[in-house]
Amino acid sequence: MGTKHRLLDTPPEKVPHAFAQEVIDFCQPIEAVTAAYVGLTEITEDFGFPREQLAAAFELAADDDAHLQEFGERFYATLPPDVQAGGCNVLDESGAAAWRRQAQRVFSR
Image (cartoon, rainbow, N blue to C red; front, top):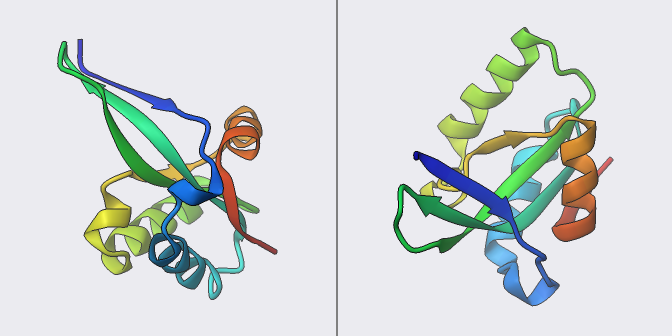
């Protein structure tokens, strides 16, 4: 079956300030980031019980392969393990619409 990820409705009180600040600090020097979100996801692996995991997601001005590769490498090289655990989520338009509705925007340009 693999792993299933589902974005949950995320009220502000579910987003720790320190987690959001890590995402904000990461985004500020990267001009390509136009918005960033923190959301609570539900992860179900194989037939196990679901667990909740905070995740960060990003809207980028440029999403060609070169920019995506550089962005992903920087994400995993600089962010702490608790932020990395949710994955490096770069959003297309339909994904961005879902994160705008259900997650907390922590950064915008």
